[in-house]
Length: 260
Image 1 (cartoon, rainbow, N blue to C red):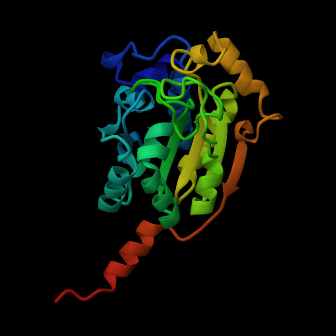
Image 2: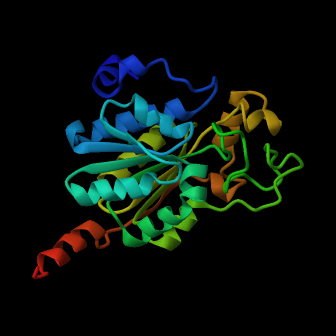
């Protein structure tokens, strides 16, 4: 990241970051900053909402109005912010466990309502900060602290889940496809409605070392080369549509109500 973007968008007093060597979260943070800069939205009109976990730490490094919320509750907080100030561009930073496990119901219904939020899901296939447990996106047979003999459950596809629930912009990218990641996030920010970017990233400490991916570069190569073999690794913008946005519809509705 160039010095100009650091000066403009990051809280330098919070640096250096606490992420482990080889973690891809810093790459996603950089991509998000570049996407915000390219969107030409005034930073005073942006609010960053983070949940709990390694990914959500990114919000604390960003020099915006930011809020650090409860585990799994980033989307409800973001919804409240958007309803209170509809002109704000509200961006949610969340992990695969935070967004799709404890926060999974909130994710589904925010998609269904098509609330104008941008959600960046940092997907490293595991609960990184809270102990290395299995998450909803941990691949079948993968080893974690709660599946030492191999995960028995199938992982679900975040993009397909959000599509079925009604999100209007859905993309997947990876930390191994940086330019694509920036463009995917920029598209999500500029699209009115509920936008989701699944950003596949690396966790060499909790996931890689348990699953024969000893070096961060091994994990990057899986992301770079795995799309042809694994549907859940394929990147792209899978949906980009216009639909009625919930907050606009809500404001129109309450403007017609007579208060007695």
